[in-house]
Amino acid sequence: MSRPPIIGITAYGRESGPRGMQFSLPTAYVDAVRSGGGLPILLAPGEADVGATLDAVDGLVFAGGGDVAPSRTGGEHETNYAVDSERDGFEFELLGAALERELPVLAICRGLQLLNVARGGSLHAHLPDAFGDAVPHRVAPLDPVPHRVALEAGVGLGRLFDSGEFEIESWHHQAVDRLGEGLRPSAFAPDGVVEALELEGAPSVLAVQWHPELQREPGSPQLGLFRGLADLARKRAR
Image 1 (cartoon, rainbow, N blue to C red):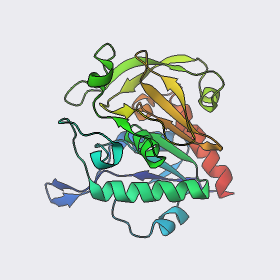
Image 2 (tube, rainbow, N blue to C red; image 1 turned 90 degrees about the vertical axis):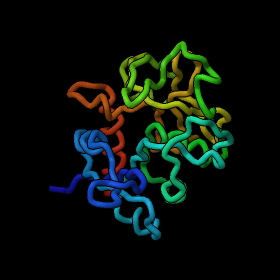
Image 3 (cartoon, rainbow, N blue to C red; image 1 turned 45 degrees about the vertical axis):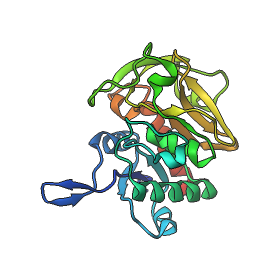
Image 4 (cartoon, rainbow, N blue to C red; image 1 turned 135 degrees about the vertical axis):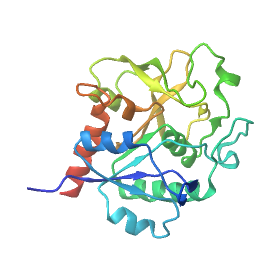
């Protein structure tokens, strides 16, 4: 029997724990990759040899987490949190190399923002300042909130969902402002916030602003994102 595709998931930055410094990641990402048919491994910030890292995996998940450094995104706000230069440096280099190799990528929340900034785009520093509070994208302190998103017609993301409109779980205070080069919005929230991106000429790259790993129950259409990633990674591994 052939092995499942190996999916690398980017971990959170270094933080103090009960036994010293630690790297961490919510288990929902690992469970979702497993449910989608992949074999997850965690990729910790600080790895110097990005090429060797990519040699070890068949696909990537860029996980959520703290804000990308304001110096990179084009906007600073008092609500910025968990900014980590080591994680930023590692993930920007990892993403650039993955795109060059045409590696399958699923970018989630912060991951979508990372992709947009890596392609020369910018971010809204704090969504309530730009879009108001009609659609809650984050409720303090850590509770994800549901809201609906609508897919654009004719986008690649549509192959994974039966409906053009569905409910997602959201937790973010920043989002796409100026689009990066080659990126196309493929889903929007009711207030106009960009909720998904696709990269021209790269059908194996998908980015969503919501958290599909939180909707991984059997039968959930969100699992299609992880199954799709695993299928692409499996074909590439062959």
